[in-house]
Amino acid sequence: MTLQPAYKQIQSYILRSIDLGIFKPETQIPTELELCAQFNVSRMTVNKAISELSQKGILHRIAGKGTFVATQKHELPVTKAFDIFDEISTSGNKYSGHQLQLKIIPASAEIALQLGISEGSDVGYCKVLHFENDIPLMLEERYVNHAIVPDFVKQKYGDTETPSGYLQRHFPVSEMEHTIEAALATKSIAQSLSIKENSPCLQLSRRTWTGSTLISYVNMITAGSRYKLKLHSRIEN
Image (tube, rainbow, N blue to C red; front, top):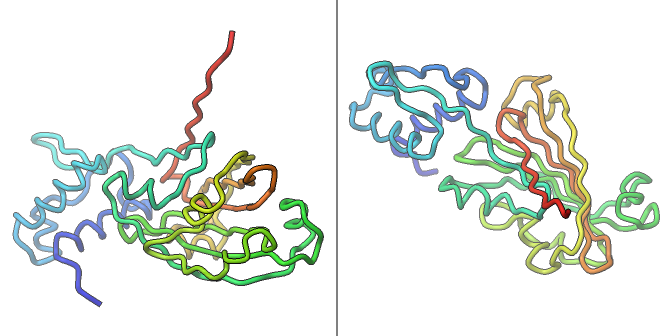
């Protein structure tokens, strides 16, 4: 594995510390001199790391006081289908993904109900952990109607392909149904997202149709500190 440049290592440390709640919004991070000593690098290297994170709105500098964590959350759109790869990439950050499971399973009673199929029918199942700048951002569990999308389980989901991206390219979304709720991180979710157990999380469940066919049911969970909901509606008078 190629070793990250020193300034990237500093950025990863800052981002992980923010994600774990060590560096909280509007609190000061270590000074440039402290980071120089911690990573045994020049002040120019530290300045480059902080400047890039400041340009992305993750940090902000206050003259004469220091550098602080900015209050910022990703927007989670609930009125349109989104691909997390595009969302992260267009913000100028690095996307990566880790495929944890990909297989065909028999539909449980709950999944059969969500997909509108018979219990025991074949379902394509995947579990993927999505990363932003090497920090775990979202855990996704997706179920698709295998009879309609038999090639779903033949893909490889990771750094260049996401389940949502694959489905949107081949089966354009015509209709969606969202359920959004607050949740607490279980031990396994906390381990996946590198957060503390019982930390507040945001869980989005979504069903999607292509044409008149119900094709996909997905559960996505993320740390509550990383996302906010966005809803735009036009009111007809």
